[in-house]
Length: 231
Image 1 (cartoon, rainbow, N blue to C red):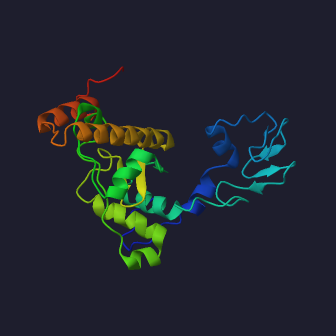
Image 2 (cartoon, one colour; image 1 turned 180 degrees about the vertical axis):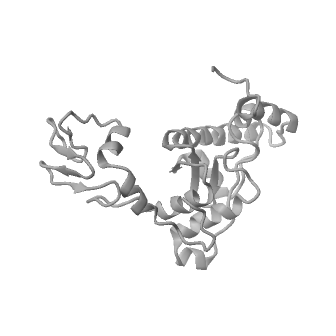
């Protein structure tokens, strides 16, 4: 989708509805759909397939119905935040927001997570940034969209592919990736880094790392001549 310069969000909901079926989404999330397009309904205790899936879905048991966008279920309260990120970062295909305890602790402290070791450098190129305070106007206005705006503002000058996550001050972490699986993976890594760094600084408040070591570890895994891992 195009990167709108007027700040408006593209009509991605309509585009998704026209290009993705309910059956495709169900199968992507591991729901087994039989040759008749029937599956066990995830919305109630279903021993036998009672949900019909094609462009839309309908459960003959609990009567849940909808498509990949409109349904009987409410969308995530963070949907607008995610849409701002998708609009600003064209290379991402999944966004995850958690309230994992160590990352939230750093967010509540309003602190970037410094890079102090190679575990961090293998996944995030430099500190994991924390946003600034949201203004009263941002909080009282379109809060979820403004949360996304505060992330974009903090990420200025930072490659979102090399730094696939951020802390929203007083709130928690948002992570992203090329798809939903990678976004979850980066959120998990971010939480572990938050934990390790807190323990490190409790042992040595002056802990640091050479920039050359950060560069070495990040580039050997993500650079054009990457040598890390199995091919």
